[in-house]
Image 1 (tube, rainbow, N blue to C red):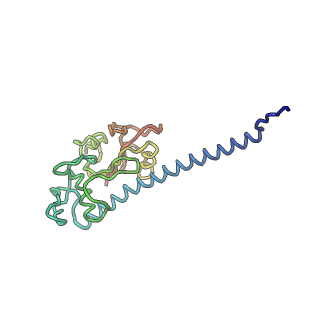
Image 2: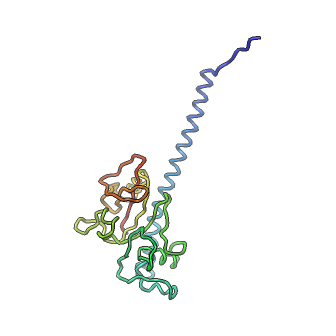
Image 3: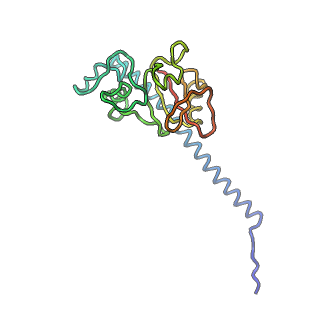
Length: 217
């Protein structure tokens, strides 16, 4: 007895292709929704920490990290020197004594303006570092951001967030400022996943680049 082997009809193949297309479209759409959620989270980081800073200033008339009266929370709590300039870079490592850029987080946490405990910098949604420092030309990130007073750069307090994928960094700058990587209230430098920052003349969206963005308070 002969068995007739049947293949797929063109209609069946078309239906399968449509289903695959719908599945792929759903996956890609889901990925974009996740990225958009992370972008909103990163914007909330900048906004929330700014609000905490201004709240601290209003309550204590001091800058967190630089607050010389931090012993209000106990005699062992380390305070700053009160000159309203933070020592240390935004991503400074733990030290003894701690740099003021890390004490910033300890003071904000002790005051209840942000959650947590200790002086460690928080992370962002992209496994990068969120930190604060004074924009001075002696700092690697600040110098790369072209922060000297003569060039109109950042010379006051800045908040930085690192390891931002190019698509995210562009969206952040557009939504919070002017979309220009080296001008305005938000500026950035290109970095690798090891945070080796280099100056950038313009954003580049290749899907492989990362940026550190900084915004002045």
